[in-house]
Structure formats: C-alpha cells, structure tokens
Image (tube, rainbow, N blue to C red):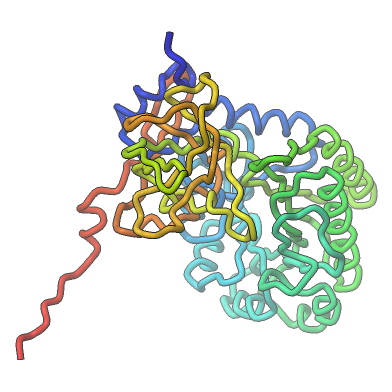
Length: 422
C-alpha cells in the first residue's frame, strides 16, 4: 500500500513524472475553500481584492476572479495579467511606490477603479498627464498609529510606502491645485503576516478613522477606503492559525460602524499570502543523500533559487517552513535532515534539521504552504537554472500553468559580443 502524497487523486509521483521537478503544485480545491470560507464570514459590503504580487500566475488569478475577487496590481505586467484573468477595470487598483509614466498611462487607458498615489510627486505627475475629467486617485496614507501584529510593518513608521498622515493634513492647498486629479478615497496597509485577529481589527479601525479625518480636513468625498489586510499563514513552530471567526466579527463591526456614517462608501480589503499560501507545494527530487560530520544532508534538484521565502528573510534565526516526504507521506520520521538545493553557496538551505522518514535518492520532498511568494520572490536565474514549472490541479484535472524555463529561454535574451583581437 502506497503512502505517497496525492492531489485530488493524482499521486505526486505521477505529477512529477509528467511535469518534471522542481515543480510548484497548486491545489485548486484548497484555493477555493480558503477564499470562500473567508468570503462567507466577511460583511458582504467588504470587497476582497487579491494582491497579485503574492502569486501572479494568470490561472491562479483567474480562479480567484471567478469566485468574485478583484485584483490589486503593482506593475504593467500584473495589470495586463488582471485583464487577461477577466477582472473588470472597476475591480482593479494599482499601487506601488515607484510607478512609471507608462504604467500610469496604462491604468488610465484601461480605466481602473483607482491609482493609489504614494507620494506628492506622484500626484503632481498624474496631474501633468492632463486626463480629461481627472485621474481617479486614492491617497496611500502612512498613518500616525503603529500597526499591531505585523511580522513586517509597512506603515506607522518611516517607510517608502505612502504619504505620512501629518504631511497629508498639511496638503489641502496642494491637493486643490491639482486640476486633473480626482481624489476618491484613502488606502492604508499596515503590515503583513498578521496571525492575531485583534491586530487586524485594530489596524482596520485605525485606517477607517484616518480616512474620515483626511476626508474632513482635505475636503474630498470619501468614496473608497482600502483597509489593507496582511492576514498571515502560520509557517513555523509555535505559530497558530489565524482565528478567522474572531477576525470577521471585529472587522465587520468596524465596517458597519463606519458605513453607518458613510453609507455608499466602498470598503476594500486586499489579501495575497492568506488566499494562496495554503494551496501550494514546492516539490523537489532528492539527488544525493549524504552524511557530513554527523549531520545528514539531502541535496535536491531545487532550492532557494525557487523558494527564497523558505530562507527566512528578515528573521535572525533560520526557521523551517513545513517540509514533508511526499514519497513516504504517512511514514514516521526516522532522523533529522538538512534539505539543500543545487546552488554553489552554503546559503542554499531550504530546511535545517527537519525530521523526516528515511530519504533515498529519487524521493520527492515538499515544502508545504508555498503558494505565495515562491517563484515571484526568488532568484530564479542564479546558476542559470531558470524557473520551475507550475501546475494547477482544478476539478480533478492537472494543468500546466507555467512551463519551466528552457536553455533557449535563458540564452535567447542574451547577446554575444566577441572582443576584437588587438
């Protein structure tokens, strides 16, 4: 009797044989379940937008769009991805601290719901586009209050994101001078990887309050408020699942209180990691298994070049994502292994001293909860290995949704110049 891991009835060995390794596998059932579970708990007046940066695969975006999610984008390619995935322009917003003129013009041409302006200079640049009727803009505020619960704070302290709340409060005359900009609301994003419901509720209330203050002081109609999100996925030991029921109760109360005063205002929450993190598994094949000075090492065909998030960037201590033997999925652990990749650096360590059943060359290992910030946040060109294939299993069928890079892909963009002989 086999003990290997399966995805909607597909043995992992069959997927690896068909699509090769390294490989990202996304379980469409998990993707849908996570979204719908949250959606049914949140007040229906809260629009959920998917942050494409977490996993910009067009098929992943299309699944979430089919369920009702809008899409938040931060580059020209992500904007076109949202369009290709079927997102209506009114359900797309564009943010990011360093937008190009080309990106801004593309947003105007497509007619997105709003461009999220992150500096006064950006507002001036938008005004200079002289769009008839004005460019719809949300002001990204860096609030005066500090975030709660964020593993990575992105507001409430010095940051390249947004405009400080006190700066905005002094900018009434500047905003009124912009004849081709229409301010429709406020955006706030306090941080990411939040696992405490109370922190999300605190941040939501704070952003809603800041939005009302800015609307009153600056004299614009508050038609949209994006309260951010930052919901986390527990990767490491001693981290607990986010209490979604408690979160929804608190957020819904905050939103209801706000909408009692501001009926008709659109409220948005944007989520990336939480929606897609659970559905993905990074699959690698063990090439060599060896002992070195008392420790066991598995050298796999993929590593941090495809999954840089597993390195634990931003952490002082290396902590492991959940790693399992996919070949011997139900067997008990035998010994601890260090899981490494093919790169010529000692930093190419996916997991340290993780307890696994016996690992043999040819076995498949999986880094779980890897649907977010996998290839999109990894140095795929290191040693010219290129990016791995991505597979989405949807309604029982396995689809190749990104082919792996080939030699031609990697060399075809380069130009060979021979130095002249002296």
